[in-house]
Length: 316
Ligand SMILES: [Zn+2]
View (tube, rainbow, N blue to C red):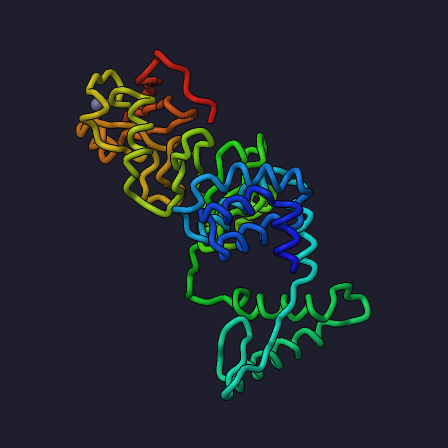
């Protein structure tokens, strides 16, 4: 009933798509679910962006695109909804048939029950008279702490893809959390600044979508990042070298084996074999701004090199 009402009164584009056979019920339902809390005007704007071409998209892709546009259309409202849901966090347990139960994971009932009781016991022990969190929130926090808080050898890598300009706070483009999908810019900035967990920031250029900072997730650059660095510098970044960038190697300014080493636009340059090799023989190099290299020789003399002085570096 709810979907029928929404389609007829609030989502004329989705309704039309169904009439023309571009959208099946599942895609329409997926889309309507994402825009359900928007005002009708905003919902129509999201329809106009997301629905063209939807016949060849999967429901999952439609959901992610819709979610991204919903965040974009009103980032502050999206952040408010996120915070409200965080305050409603809880651990849910449902008995299933044949001795099974669902506790976020589909487990044998006895395991689900034992885990839930353990969580519940920890939560109750935390519920002092000064504790403002609800029992639901305490159980959710106890579960999180049990899974993540105990020091262990297991290292999880979670990738967060965010536009460089968004991370700098210049805009509020939605970020992508790997395995989940679009999320609000504000939350992405909080996560990116949280160095207590294993977050991997992957920065993208907001215009081209090219990844400009892979952090430590990969040693070899993508072709797009390599092309971008080569286009910026045009030639070898070594002192007084005219070797064209296209015939150079991709040089990590700070060696990747160092803890601060990363595969990124502002920490890489094209280098010929000779200039790559002299770093193994006492020369050091830094990159104070993208496209400007400061080389220091073994005797301490410095060379200030801007391989391509024709163009100012792009503003990121
Ligand atoms: Zn060179």
